[in-house]
Length: 111
Image (cartoon, rainbow, N blue to C red):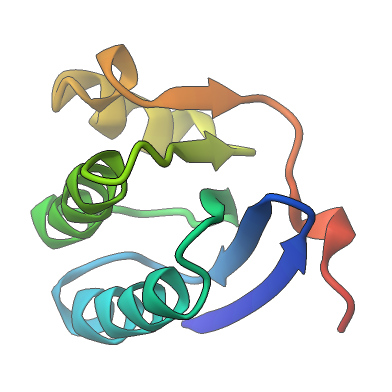
C-alpha cells in the first residue's frame, strides 16, 4: 500500500493505493493519526479510488478516524469508492454516517 497526502485549504486529502486489510490497517491508522494531529483544524478526505479490497480492519480504521475527527467537529469524507468497496462499506453501515463523493480527490495531490 502507498499513501499520499496533500493539504488543500481546509482539507487533508489522503490517497490510498492498495488493499486496506489487516496487514495495512496499522500503518494507515498511524499515518492518518499523525496527519490529524499535525493539522488540528482540517477535515479529512480519504480517496479510495485505488483500493480494491477492504476488510474489517480497514473498516475499523475508517470508523476510528471518523469518531476521532467528530470529537472536534471535523468531518471525514470518502471519495472515488469502487463498487466492490462500496458494497462492504454499505453492509457495515458506514455509508449511512460518512459522506461519499463520487469523483476521486487524488487529482489535487502533487506527486
